[in-house]
Amino acid sequence: MDSLLCDYNRIVSDKPVNAGSWRVYLESSTGRRLMEMFDRMLHYFGPQHWWPGETELEMMAGAILTQNTSWKNVEKAINNLKDKDILNIESLHEITVHLLAEELRPAGYFNIKAVRLKNLINFITENYAGDMDLLLSEKTGALREGLISIKGVGPETADSILLYAAKRPVFVIDSYTYRILNRHGIVDDQIAYYDLQALFTDNLPGDAGLFNEFHALIVRTGKDFCRGKPLCDSCPLNGWETMNITGSN
Ligand code: SF4
Image (cartoon, rainbow, N blue to C red):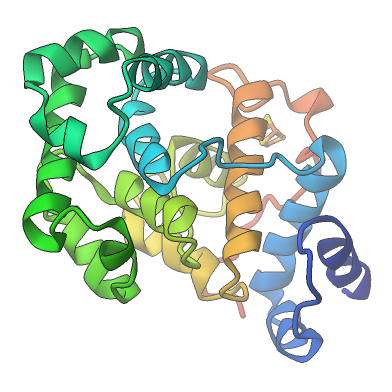
């Protein structure tokens, strides 16, 4: 238990976490098992340094553009916006959906993503006068409610924005999280998004740095090993839990 705490302090956080509160969580069997998962992935891959993006707006745009495509393609679309100097609220508000879609073409589903990005920009413009600081000053619950109300922004995208752009301790659930936990017999494949999210948030300290690194490591493990045909023999999670841990505190 102590080694997990030390490793987290050493590798992820640039400031010491409260050891007392950590111990409470690590004494929960579910929390300890989840931290064993984290520990195995972190030691194998090292820190992932997410989220690649220079500004909050770039991270928000990335959260929308990354749906159903690789990050490499997202970067090309983001670079198009930067090259044209339109990666700012005012320009994205003024540009037509048609012209925006052309810039987003490398990200795939570019017509849909252009509409979704415009919806986000309109939301910020209409509700916060285009002021990103005002938007990000909202409490987490209100911010999530607002983001979810935007057409085309689902729970995973909203939570990515909350975690990576707004730096809130919100655990992001994606298809790899479902797949890995399901394959290890921890949850069934019909579990609802917020129930799976609660498994993490109810049993881990609410630490945005930890949640950032944890999600990034899950995605890395999913991409490299937990594919359609899993590569279990060489996976860092080989030998980790194979039993149901929900409700086992
Ligand atoms: S590849 Fe195998 S060991 Fe790795 S996470 Fe998937 S099911 Fe688990």
